[in-house]
Length: 379
Image (cartoon, rainbow, N blue to C red; front, side, top):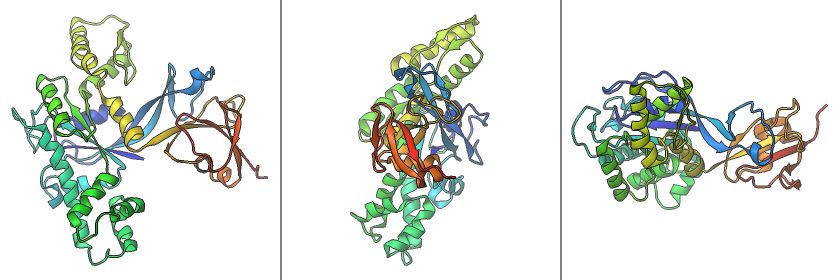
């Protein structure tokens, strides 16, 4: 799974990326700060079964803090998109080439309206227009690929070969073919984008007064879209304060607690975030956006494989050591293959740790399942 962070220049893309990964990325208030795509690891936040099952976990691939498991996901922050990118304007080609690798897109929109379509400072840009033209640029790009290759891809098999270069799966193409033909290239391209590159809109800079009004207008105009209020700068400030031991705060929390002496300026900044971001929106939105992208849009679930169903551990005694993010509908045998090819090939059955019941290869996994896999031991 790869999550693409997209949007026009100066919308706060790199700030969001830094807030999600805490990497040092170049951030500036001028267009095209990001030239080469930044890549990093963010985390989705889920409840860890350790508290429910009354065990002390020892994660090997993630982090558990106070019963909250933070599971790594890959993020890519690509060059800013401007109108005309599908025709090569701005950093369009770089943007689109990076885009093909993403399974879901997080569109960072400057909800304050303080940057125009090209990312330059202005007074009153309509962020609703940003939502529309980004989708339109991707649609035009898909349509241009179809048009250039129309003679080659009249057959579905050829369509799969050509369009797979856009990071599109065969099942996506099959679904679009149910309603559209390639001759309807614009409609075909739009539907293909909706299915293969779903979008979550992060209404960034939500702490600014203009942003709150614009956010409400965005929700009214696009009731069918997922639009989340967000303040990436506030998330960075809270994470730094927590790292320095000034506050207790976990990504996704709706508040923080000051636990050390802070200066009047720090106190003022923290209270500003509390009053203008956390209280009205129950968080900075950064963690919420990531979670929605993975679990609501991509429809993934979290599953915990263990070797010993009684101790909930692996062979080394690590309790609840790993968590796998899998597409909803995944089976016990598919989990076995994810753990290791040999475990998949030797699969006999699995045990649902909570119910202690045996389940077969085609058992459909549920979110939060703790599963012990029993397989043939190879000599």
